[in-house]
Amino acid sequence: MRHHHHKGNKDKNLTSLPQVPKNQIADSNSEEYEFAKELNAEYEFEKKPGFDTTGVRRKDDDEE
Image 1 (cartoon, helix red, strand yellow):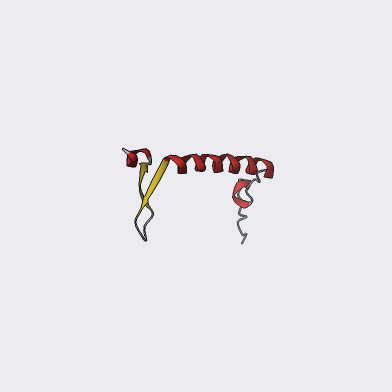
Image 2 (cartoon, rainbow, N blue to C red; image 1 turned 90 degrees about the vertical axis):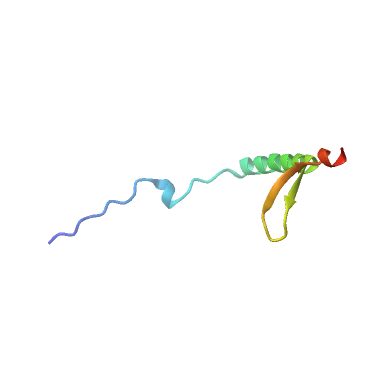
């Protein structure tokens, strides 16, 4: 009797993911950091203890 040969997966991404150059990672992280600082200045996140963020409110609404 012959054993059937199993052909391997042709998709190389499943075995090893392509790598992103470090200089691109640093640029995207710094941009995200600046964006997060802007969001933090404009919005307040409502959280209850033990839960994730439940709502978002503009900080300007509190002053009116």
